[in-house]
Image (cartoon, rainbow, N blue to C red):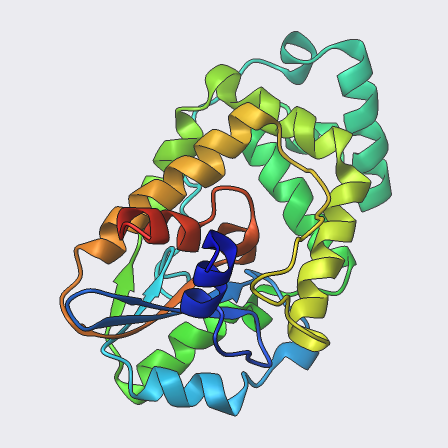
Length: 267
């Protein structure tokens, strides 16, 4: 039996009506990995009954960060030089064009870190496409976990997420540049991930062709390195049945979390 078939048999033995992968590790540890989207549409609520049933009986729910509690993690951000000193003329023009489309002004962002500007632009773009945070999959799972009294474990937490962003070179100018360059690709990627919840999830063994929205260096920091850290976090858990909500691209993208778990398990 070839490697691909072994992986398919081990990880993709069951199809769900939502994007998810089941993984069993030694020590009686069972993980239902859910491809979450952090903002969603009304059609994504309520969550599928089968997923809620798994959550009701889970040992714990694991999320990237508990977004249902606490205030904004973006308070007390460092003050940066004006954008004219940080961006090229072409970058400023591209930024101004998108800000105009979104009904925003450069003055609102002039001294903010570039990575924070990128996140605000991406969130505003998602809102313009009809997405809202309260319909996000992880937010809905957290609300249901509270209802079911299911314990919640953070894979990293908002403070660590902000710390990762603060460590990006040049206050995250590469993330802002990628956001500007791949503006339309990002919109298409959002539509693809929405279709996984509203229409049909990807099959485990299929080759996914997804729009590219990260440079290689950013993909390493924001995707692969975090996947590696989450792999260690999951591997350290005791026996139990866990529901894990991770961003969909962490499950299906290059160097994804299931792949890392499989490698660590020696498969």
